[in-house]
Length: 228
Ligand SMILES: *[C@@H]1O[C@H](CO)[C@@H](O)[C@H](O)[C@H]1NC(C)=O
Ligand SMILES: *[C@@H]1O[C@H](CO)[C@@H](O)[C@H](O)[C@H]1NC(C)=O
Image (tube, rainbow, N blue to C red):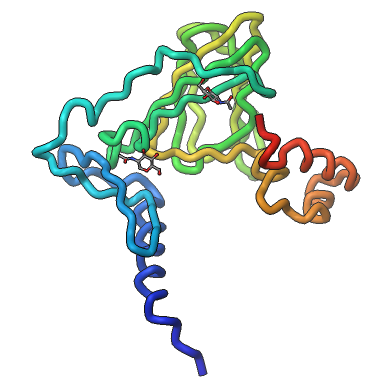
């Protein structure tokens, strides 16, 4: 016979389910706007399901984010920096299915292979020269690449692994629109070799068909306190 779950677990489970359902994709707006105010429950769950701020007290500042002229600091191992303006930084984005990023690159800086699970990305190069690409899913793992110069636009379809590499001798800057208020990002190397806790090295040794020392080395490189 099944024992029934403690009573308090039921509302928490329902709420977790509700979060999962409504955050699967950005919903279509049912009103002009729904400026986000954070929702949290007594159980302490904060999810992408946001309450709307009372429209009577909404101001222009709820739709405003200053400062994207400021370059991100690229003095890190990859030589790149992404400044994302998502719903957490611009509450007026809530329910609108869109966000924006500024991506800075030092010379030869790399925005490494990553995917946005919830958003297609379209970029325009404002400065410099970028070698960009994405790979299709396992049907054929086909690579599409392009060298982009100032003013060039490129689109990375939702969910596919992509990268941007500054192949010029100068800094580069791109701006990206993303088709979600919260597109999310999974950086492949960090997720696979830097998960917390680490994935069992036997799994990675077999998956990547390499010696265990290689896996140990990569896990050291990407462990969570060694990212930048
Ligand atoms: C990106 O730039 C911001 C602003 O300069 C800085 O606070 C942040 O630490 C940088 N991130 C990385 C990964 O270097
Ligand atoms: C909502 O919570 C997120 C994550 O904790 C935080 O970054 C953001 O500033 C909060 N937004 C508002 C409008 O309070």
